[in-house]
View 1 (spheres, rainbow, N blue to C red):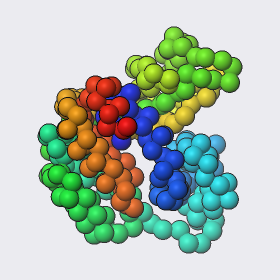
View 2: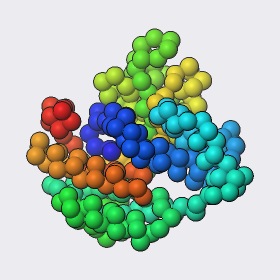
View 3: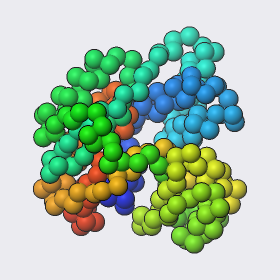
Length: 254
């Protein structure tokens, strides 16, 4: 869920609950399988696969599950599924724009799931292109302020990533968000590693160019809709352009 930048890390807190239901594991495994199919089964030569594996490991996906997904995707083991990426566009409560990224082997099922979740939670589907122009494809890397070598500052991260193509670093209160062009994601991630800085996640994401300010009622409705969408098996990511104060988001997630 991408909204107010500080709450980009809400995914990590919510992930614990998702993992119990197996949904998060399934989505992470799907990412690995697709990355291996597209770019090959060698993580050293496939940065997308490398990041997908790292993300799965940080969420405690068992190594045997990861290895099997790599082999299936790389054609080294049977049972692989041919997934297609589909992007749906829509609006949530208060006119909040939504991009819904699906990874599916059944387009009709994915469309029905997304449409049902939207209509039941105050959302409406939109025509292709009517929402996507409000978002830019960016590399988003989350770095914890607490590193093994000790606390890390914004200046430490800036020094490490500036020459690699990073555009900005945002303080998320306990972690930092590094933004760059999607094509520079691997270079920026590598620069962090070379500086001895561990990262929590590194993803090509959709970042809104314009945000919609919402109050407690609006934020509650938007979060409920996004949760319903993320609960769909075929939905991998939901990107939204809502913004809310820290106080409002604390009440929503209380």
